[in-house]
Image (cartoon, rainbow, N blue to C red; front, side):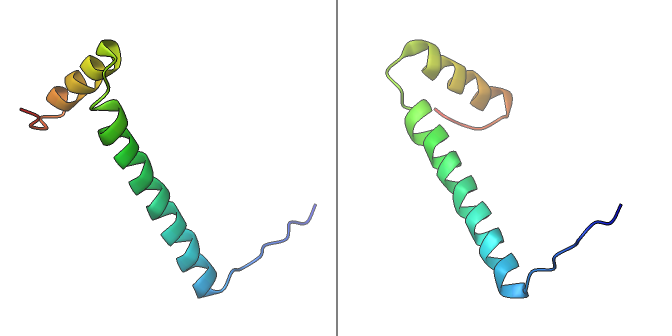
Length: 59
């Protein structure tokens, strides 16, 4: 059984890292902006409790 390995050029790896970084930032902004400021009490309180458990100041 042979496996084929493809090596990407450096530029392709950098684009992949950039895309991963942008997705992580987008997810983080979603969590902070949407979940943290949600008007749904259950979601807001869960985000609030997570912030406190991670020693993140929120008020």
